[in-house]
Image (tube, rainbow over all chains, first blue to last red; front, side, top):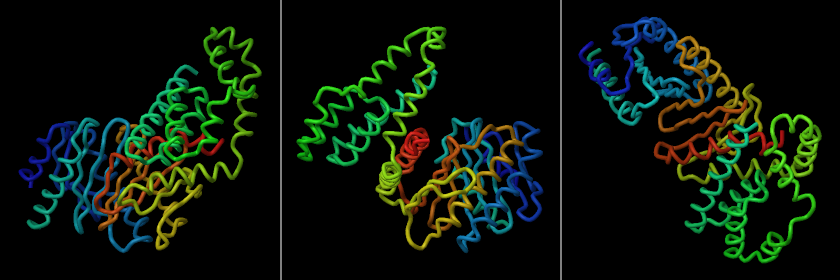
Length: 114
Length: 235
């Protein structure tokens, strides 16, 4: 699993990758350059994903697939599958187009392995 | 004050730039809208005036050209006076600028009636909706109250506005803990629908689009609208 995540972590501008259990927010696997970020990121992203699904579930029967958050000091991209959430913490300078393509590919690869 | 003035001038330049782009593409109505928005902020901006005249020449509105070429009335001279006051030192401004905010406030109240505000919002959302692939757009207050919506019938704007407000507050709570600063944009993909949320100046703009859409253009227009939302709403 770590090898699969490494493909994402080598993209320029990626500060960390985390594979999170959708049910409880626990980190299944992670690669982070800054250890302190990884501690809270799993729980935060699981929470955000759950809240988004709860909120949007009222307007649509489809769950949110891909979400991107643009903050002042960085960007968070995460893709939610049925059992897991694959998330990336990125620099502001990141090429988001490449990241999103790679994120989709990697999520499908993990899904097939599970 | 200087920063505000710079931001205002920058945003006005963006308006004129966009108007020029629309003019080049023969979209005169949209070019006129942007020129008007620029002139609303800087009434004596020659660049915008000239372009507006060119647009009216193309649309054949000669009476409006004559109006624009007519010498400025007394009330239109206020911006010149304001500019000279802006060049004074901060100490001088303290003594002389006491009456200025009241005058500006009065002027704004005169300029924007409820109908005009409605028209401006309608025009701003129509501009966004005119982008190919956009299904609808909505302006809400941070708290979730709808200001104006222009969406497809199937979509319940009230539910959407409540959801957008919730999404932003949840994201902000989470991102705060990661020390990433304020969240100003959120993009969500649900099936074949995309939702772009932009936040600024206490308002949220939500835009629904199809799968393929010019994201850059959406971004530029939403940012401009947020930047000038208070002028558009006249608050």
